[in-house]
Length: 149
Image (tube, rainbow, N blue to C red; front, side, top):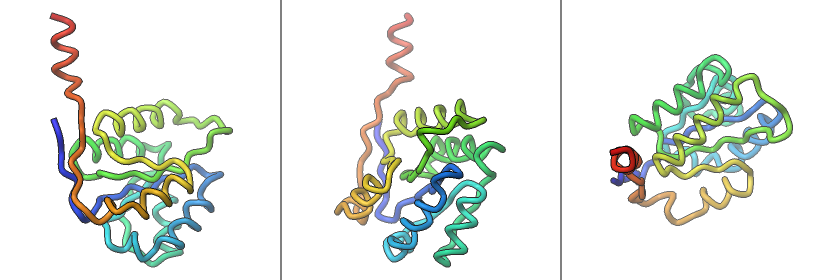
C-alpha cells in the first residue's frame, strides 16, 4: 500500500505547553515555506501560530479535549500528511495515551514527523518538501489477518 503526498503538503502543527514558544519561533522562521502549504493545528498552538505569523491555519480542539484524536483521524483520512509535534519529553500529560496513539498512527500511515526543532528544520529544507512523495505504508491489516489465520 502507498499514498502519494502532494507537492502542497497538509501540515499539522502541535506543541505541548512547555514547547509552544519553540514552535512559534520555528513557524516565524519558516513562515515563507509554511505559507506554501495547508496548515492545521491543535487549539492554542494553532491560534498562537496564526497570531504570530498571519498564516491561515485550520484549528482543531486542544490536545486534551480531543485535538490529538482529530489530527489522528485526519491522518487516517488523508487530510494530514506531515506533522510537526513539539512534545514535552519531561512532563507527564493528562492525555499521554492520546499522544501515543497519534504517534502510532503517524508511523502506520508513514507520514513525516518532526518532534524537535532540528528535525523540523531538516524536513522543511529537504528537496522533498516541494515535491510529490510516495509513502511506503506496510499493509498491517493484511499482515495481521494472515498471522491470525
